[in-house]
Amino acid sequence: MPTVLVVGANRGLGLQFALQYLKKGCNVYGTYRNESAHEAKELLESGAKTFTLDLGDEKSVQAAAEAFGDQPLDILINCAGSAGNGSPKWLDATPDEFMQRFRISSVGPFLTIKSFYPQLKKSGSSLVVNISSNAGSISQNASGGNLTYRTSKAALNMITVDLTRELAPVKIALVAMSPGWVKTKMSAWTGPLEPEEAVTRMVKVIDGLNFSYTGTFIHRDGHAVDY
Image (tube, rainbow, N blue to C red; front, side, top):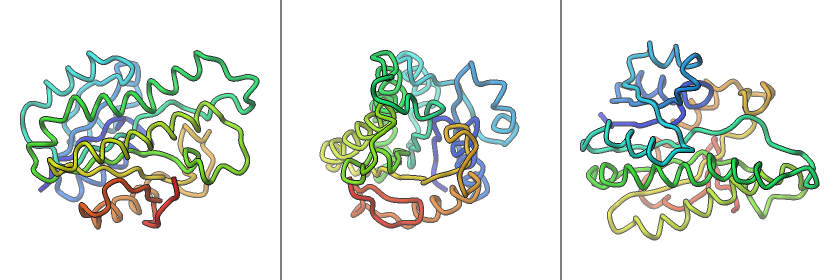
């Protein structure tokens, strides 16, 4: 069965990814930040192999890759994020808020791909799923607002597309995936779907992907999202 690494598996969507891939019999690894250990009880008791990883610290990401070892990695799910959508009005946005968003939502996923590149390559046919958002779609932004969150997810989408070109020769596929509006800490516990149902739909879509989907932006229900 595939080896799956879920970054940000202590709660919400990430926890559900870990639990559902465990139920499928996969070899599952889940990460959490030291500061989030109090939220990671269910992950730690799930049977998944776990280690700490802080997306804001490059050395922490590299240490996690070393802890994972040189085994092949078949599926990498970048699911970590910071709670909330940030300042709703652009005049209230600050440079620090921008940089924090980019560090966790854009640079962090890049660092995990970079650090786990040898293991992804060793798989021979691996998949990176970057959990993005419809809010990161430039073409669908008809309302404005939440500027720092939107731009960090748009940057993640560009990283997905750019690395698609770079990594195609070594059979590493990448997709950006939007979970839609889900009841999680990031959405202030609002949304029509529980994390379990949203991830059930996303796992079904992921299971149906092949290399021809690399570079695409996909909704949790499988339809394409315009960048």
